[in-house]
Amino acid sequence: MKLSRITGSFVLAAALAGGVFAVPAQADTGSTVDDFLTTLDGLGITKLDPAQAAEIGRGLCPVLAESGQNTASLAGQVSEVIGRPLGPATMFTGPAISFLCPKAIENVAGDLANGKLPIPLFGG
Image 1: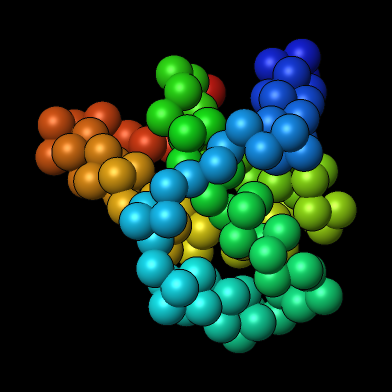
Image 2: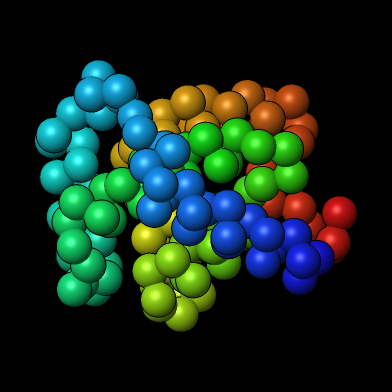
């Protein structure tokens, strides 16, 4: 488990640094990013470069689509990337997915409708 978390964190950080997660302009509107940043500010997650926060948020979308990824594992990776404890990283991850990853929300809704939980309970 620890190795996969470290590997996932490395992949996320390397991809963000290398611009692998470049997203087409039509993927989100300026107001969506603004809403995301306003939400972070309202949650007390401040002192992040807005462009970097948006890039990290958008970078979660393709990582979330990988097999075995869920919001809990992403929050751990975000914690390392933004240099914040797990609590603020979790507060960052939720709005990032909600505002910047609409397909992920559709997938979670579909999973829930089919009886699948997006966050494993009891280690499974």
